Image 1: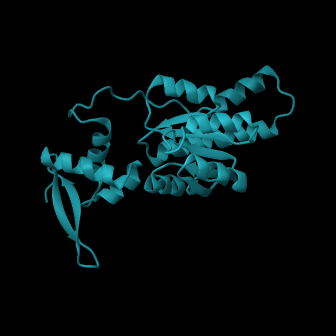
Image 2 (image 1 turned 45 degrees about the vertical axis):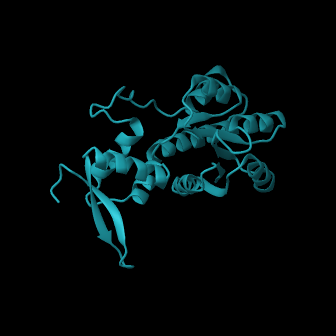
Image 3 (image 1 turned 180 degrees about the horizontal axis):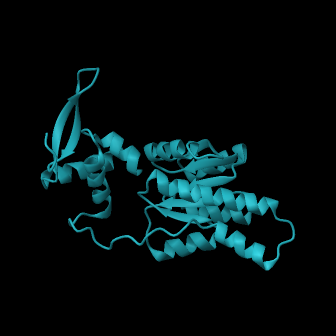
Length: 229
């Protein structure tokens, strides 16, 4: 099993990533950390094989943390998980030894593909003895998942990328859906999902419906306006 530590300052998002790691064959999530200091302590105590590492931590940059681990010879790999899209951060992550870089928000499938590519790479690396050029080329290719189709530059509905994901989650749901479930499905925090749902409702893309659970308290759920209610 590949022992994985999730490092993210958002407690809810860290929990989502941890649950997703546990769903991928060959991986186990051995813990969560929400600061650089907590991550260092967890790495020393738990000896993970892989970090899912956020860049924006409250006490230090995730990339600075990774660099210090590499400099100290700590045997751990890292997949960067971050909202940072600037090329300078991407270059710094690559030069610091990150094996991949996932831009938030991303769904379970994107994470699964990268974890499985990492697992194949580690398995081949462990099986290889003296490497010829063909083996080396194979190892570099295995570290990367198959390329995804290029994203559409602009959403035709005029929605921002994360807002479009939230709207699509509402449209795909066969029943009214709330912010907590949307956050789980697309890998964002519940407050972020609720904020975009409020904007979509004001712009009349979706409609609010009150659902009543076992406690009798109403829960805000949403349906697309083009679906009969």
